[in-house]
Amino acid sequence: MTIRVLVGTLCSNESEFTESRLRVLEQRNCAVNQYLVKDLNEYDAHNLLWDLFNKRASSFDLIVKVDADTILNRDDIFQKVHSRLLTTNLDGVQLSLLDYFSQQSIFGMGFFLPRVKFSISQNRLFADRAINREAFKIGQNQDIDILEDIGFHCRYPNDEQSYRYGLHRWKKKQYNLISSVIENWNRERDTARGWALVGAISAQKKRRISVDYGGKDFQTLRDSFNSRGKFESWLASNLPSLSSKINC
Image (cartoon, rainbow, N blue to C red; front, side):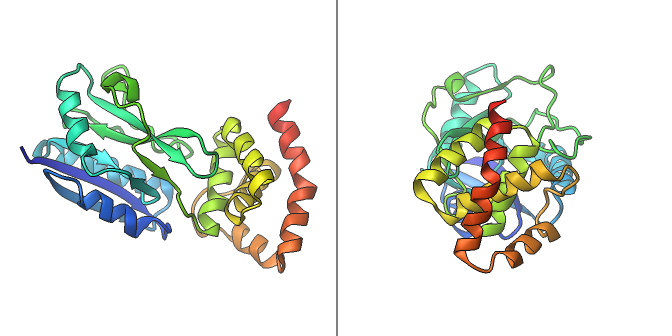
């Protein structure tokens, strides 16, 4: 049976977008309609998407939010999740992805039956939280017997993505992820995790800082790091205070 799937994707020049879109369109036994929300700030982009889902859900069998930095790792996930949801009392499910920065499983993809209603978010930092969990039951991997990560989060991020990751996770107080990024950075010394830590440090130092792409803070920092040595030296000087904040 072919299922009708509405996919909503927020995109702002993420490195994974082309492959992400390809994996979405390759899903088997699905008629996929992918709606792209491009280059808006996170708050307005999410609310535009929630409004679209509410208006168009009745024409589809499954609603899925796939961010542009997400790459699915198999071609039957839409069909499989839909069939599992129909055999449960769930209205939707949030499934995990393998996050590059932390090398942890994080919940990053939402699948919803068309009866779910989305609320306009009032919280700019948590604009992705738009479902009344008292009215609708949203499960996780184990609730539909899909235990493994279904894809990759930020598999090969660019510098701006990486900076925003650290900035955003710190502002959301997801210190466990930042701690894992520090561990991986100390081992790998890769540019992506370095920029993620620059973002986290920036958020720690400056409370009023935008989490949207295109912020001047990122450009200012990039311009100041005119060599790899200066980049690593800045991190070495600032990481201790970040680590102490996490561990306090």
